[in-house]
Length: 318
Image (cartoon, rainbow, N blue to C red):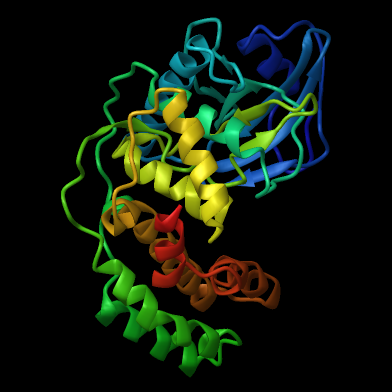
């Protein structure tokens, strides 16, 4: 039995991960991520998320394993997150008929929302930052280095030459983005393994109202204060009152991070800059209209909800 577009034998997955005696895979992926697509597998023992792992680089595979160990430790510490399923041999990733897959417990989640309960959200991030875990994945330029004025100028020129429909809107935001990037590159106050991807796609409400965090594939060293700032940018936008509530709940739960100034927003500034740059790169490399529309979405997420110096100032007021 096979899922459409997924050349895998379902009985092989069921057997490798000891999921029961029979199973049925969804006809297509129910979600897609940077490092693979996710199918739902229903077996006589329950429901599971099967993720095809497209990564082939040894370093990237090692980072995925590190993230899974962090997720396992977080679950053991009481953080709501899907259980990682390992093979009968204890492996995270199984290679079946030439394709790599991994499995998690299935959890019914609501669609991404930015208005999650502020106090629950602050408490969840604090609990994640209190997990005792020493990983092997270190700092990465995606989270710690700016794009820079020269590269932004080059991207705008290339986009204009290809008549990108969003180039004028993006160019108008570039001066503010360059100003923000001056906060990027300084030494963090402290480092620990963090999730590093706490956007609304990866922090959601379950059907019973609990908040759940998932997709630990990008976990690695970061400053917890800077990750807290990312959460404020995503879930408080420029609402100082909501930002204050998240921070108070985080502190009440014993979270180690503190927002002291614009430097604490360095990681989210770097991430958003690289996300926009990647969207530009992909749009320029697209060979059909559907791909261009999809990659334009990467850029428009920032255009429609830009991070600006004024937004950070209002969040700091909180």
